[in-house]
Amino acid sequence: MGPDSSWMFDFSGTVLPIFLAVMIGIIAVSAGRGLLQWSRNNSSPMLTIPARIVSKRSEVQHQQLQEEGGSSRTSTTYYLTFEVDNGTRVEFKVEGNEYGMSAEGDRGMLSYQGTRYYGFQRHPHYSSAEQL
Image 1 (cartoon, rainbow, N blue to C red):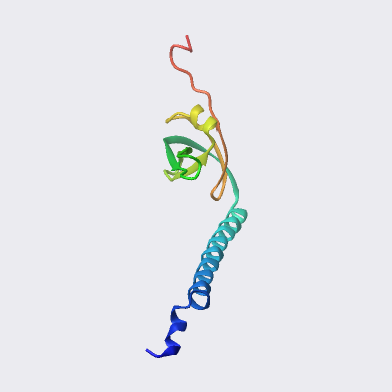
Image 2 (image 1 turned 90 degrees about the horizontal axis):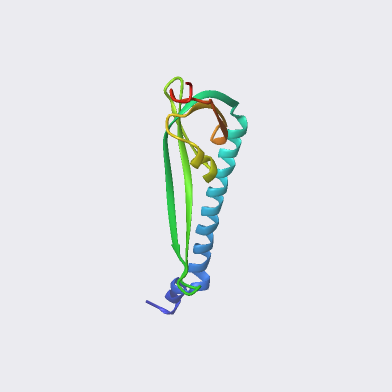
């Protein structure tokens, strides 16, 4: 190892440019995926079709924040799975209030475009006690 071998370990000359190139690559791939999904959604037809709710789920994420004296933050993401008349199932992320108002087995009209959820209009259903 001669005096010229130290350049391989020079942080600002080797490591930093590689790190920046990797970070820029990750950002570019992520932005490209988002743009591709946006384009696919825009080219998909807006559909409003009969469907029923077959499943509900939620995902809770908990973050412990070290910098703020050990405080924590929790967020919940809600999902509804719909089954359309041909048996196909699709899952969408929904707001908490819509999740709370929904029940498995609800039937109605599902509106969506690609992966964009626009809403679910429930058909009213009555129990036999209410019909008397």
